Length: 91
Image (cartoon, rainbow, N blue to C red; front, top):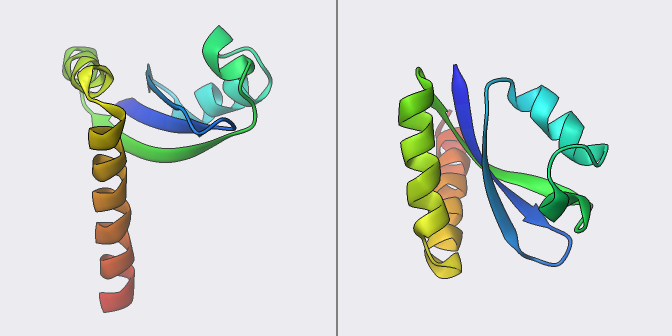
């Protein structure tokens, strides 16, 4: 299982990445061992993730997200969070 994720950094910037083990990758980012970009903008919040069965699908989605404008990424994040909130309220 692979994950494509978006982090929101301290400065408000968004960082997209891919990981086989999401928890391990988040721990690496938090410890400053993930990426130079995130390391220089700690702390961060995980604001979005998607699961994929194979690396190729995850890599393609990561490329799509990285090509998006910040405004579009923000809408993607907001849409997912709204869906999760609605699902929580319905249950």
